[in-house]
Length: 511
Image 1: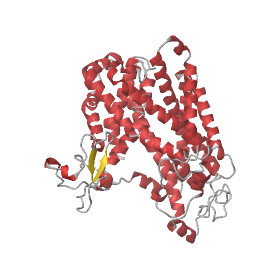
Image 2 (image 1 turned 90 degrees about the vertical axis):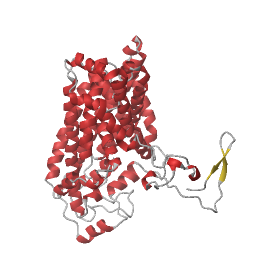
Image 3 (image 1 turned 180 degrees about the vertical axis):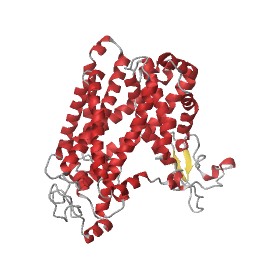
Image 4 (image 1 turned 135 degrees about the vertical axis):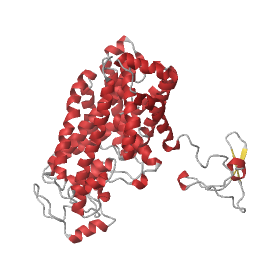
């Protein structure tokens, strides 16, 4: 959590305020605001590309949550036992060995079964097999698309219809819906939290969640992941903050809004961590294993680990309905913002009277395009592509886009000009802390992440005989660089290769 809060204070909140003030002052979307410096309009297109990528796969996640929500409307959850047609001989459910009826608390597992579940490497949970073999029918390779999963395709259509209907009148309609989608998840979280902390083993899970791993504090990857998480959860560099702020009144106190929203958002993330790990602690205690064995990340946490933990609770279908309904509401709130960002950018860019009057048709067109582009993600290989897009389309790219935006405003447009604009809009200049962060701290931290300003240790001529002078290989590169320079074996001849222009060059045969 330490890197997370550092990134929140010095990068998250300052850049959140910058985007809100940027959009509110210009009253334009993520493309129109770059009249401030037309040369950097590509940053706005970058925001659109990121929002497009996220909008495509994010609604697929929502459609899977819809599928699990509908599947929970049964007396017994379908992933509770290993007696289903799709289960394999390796399946070992925590409820299969006990005579359990719905509505009663499951007794402790027999010692021999607990020992088996703890030490066997072949054990797969019924929730994992339900996820892989029934919901996804997962293929063996990213290139093997297989068939489109029709139940998921239907849920994807439902997701896009809901999003379109909520945005049919733009922010006027979505603003009313968000009152419910933004507040009701807190009710569900509180219900799940109260239930979770009263379970045996919940304290173990919470302590696992709160205990820092100090041995990883100096790893660059940890800080990079913390920055990506802050930018992802706050919505920085998506273009959504600029778009939504453009609908504010010109003199709205966006400084107050940015501080309150940023802190509330991150406090909610921490609160949700207590909810998740209290249940996982209970599950670990029930299985007799460490919390790290049941904790997961990404889709594995939302659709495998947590659903399995819910099967251990009395009246498990009720808790499952509440959990996946909460996921749907949270996802829809994000999807509203993503779709509105794209629609507003298109309308602002075209800018004629016809498209302003036909904005509903633009919204419909974007929704239909998003549905069609999301169809491959509902195939048997769809989850591979979804994770690929999630890992590379909306991770460190958000950090890079925010850094370029900050540098262009502060040093191209000029920090004096921007501070005067904010004073004209709010009646006071940005506080000194934000001025320092915008000009120096935030860009410096972002540049430092992943050694962005430092050349790799293996930088230089490719062939060893050319590494002379300051490129002499005196210090071997570390394994984390991914390359290992080795002297050429005297018996190995150099292999001549022909370049694309017909010229030959020498290349050694190292790996």
